[in-house]
Length: 306
Image 1 (cartoon, one colour):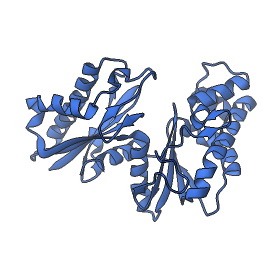
Image 2: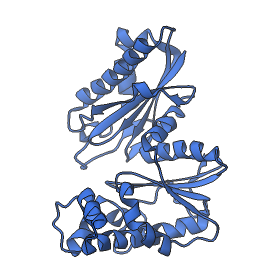
Image 3: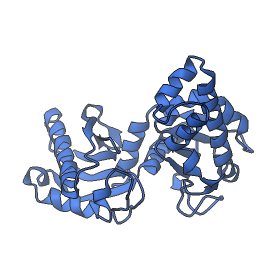
């Protein structure tokens, strides 16, 4: 049988799974340390070990001949995804991969490992894609089956990721969407959108409402749930910022649905009202938080492999 290995690279952990015909083999889903602060060779070898581990899991559950068509990697930006080169620098993660061609380095490392190569298909390939975009691709596939054709996805975490999809096509440079397809660096208030719609943005709001700089989003959410007025105000203000920042793109793109992902979106109920009250749109709009963000990312990464 033919399989694709999908890898979701995060700053703290890496998640991986194997897919067959676009379906995640749930018993292969595994979490690994990210090694984000290690040197280049250790990180590349770690990715090779993850591929090998995924193959081992397949072999334990299958008595059929397996062939790995490729490895799809969801990777944070900035990066040249077509070439597979990381441009992350100064973010305290993957700095050692700056200007490294991850795709080529990993391909050669895997090709030198006979424990892996005997299971690779003749046209085996490795592809990288933006993590937020691959999440959105997976979400689009899910919602397309429910009749949706235009979707806007935003991931809220360390930064803000954005992807707009129209009938399966990732939109860039149209409908008021930037040429990159990403809105994180668009002007907003006294800086750029990511200054406000991110972990940093919530931390700044928390400081303004009397919390300390080390108060986490999770702690703020727990306080808000318990009725803490200042914590509730932090999320209410965040919801207003979010609506103000994305409204121009929602107004021009006119999606049928907005889907949120990322760690901060887990607290969406705390800023849902202020977001809905301030979002500007002209058509019927559904707003959801993904209940399968990791699965969607795996499916998106799988789609990188033809």
